[in-house]
Image 1 (cartoon, rainbow, N blue to C red):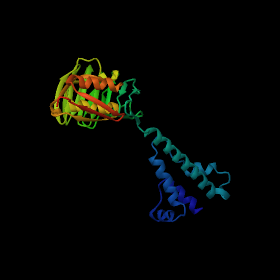
Image 2 (cartoon, rainbow, N blue to C red):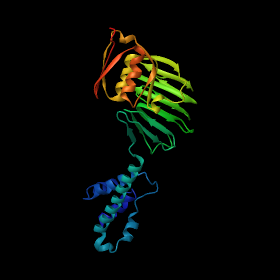
Image 3 (cartoon, rainbow, N blue to C red):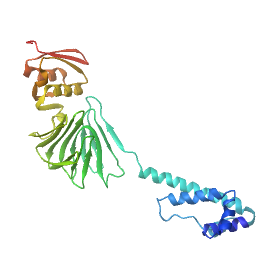
Image 4 (cartoon, rainbow, N blue to C red):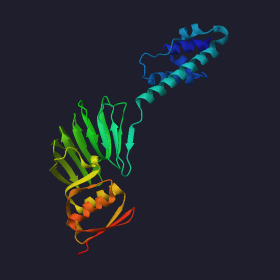
Length: 303
């Protein structure tokens, strides 16, 4: 049959220009071309190929009476297999990232695929790809988290303000609002901020507060928030109040003259509102009132 003859030559890529024009005019020509294109895009198995016409022809039960219909049926089955294969390939190689979020007064512990441990503080978001993790230990962080990293290849924590890179160590990263802060508790971390690299050994802290770079130290074994505490060292009172609002999901009204220059060194608990307010106000001889669960007023009676 002329049609079968053209298909044989087409499969062998031996069509003349005239025969190619005749083949293109066939009713099913575009369908055959689509099958070949799908098979070329399918990369899950490099050894997959379309059988030759002779192979297909020998599988047919009755060449004379059912050649055309059987050929279409077989091609359709091949197409279905290829499409299913493509779907499986893309599913396993483009798995969605793992995303973990925390709410107010909530923190979570996450074990990464390499057994590294992440403790995610409240109002934070962590994202990583489990499929590519063995080749690239990289994750995205918004908020605050403490990392205990297993030794191995490079481990990157990407935040909106910078990147923290290690091979295996313990450190804390805070990236929220106008503060980007990295505290190293064990080993050595590398902080990249605006294309500048800073090496941070254990006991050192790197911070960007309102676009101002700061270098301090810490004598703590791990961040206070892991023990439900928020700690501060010579910190602006306004920033302490902001952290207090975040921890307790409240709004604080400050009726104090000159509070912009006040600085606080100390800590407050994250699980008792009354005790936290005492810790913040008593060092300054301030008074406070809890209006309701979402509003607190702080003032100086001497003013």
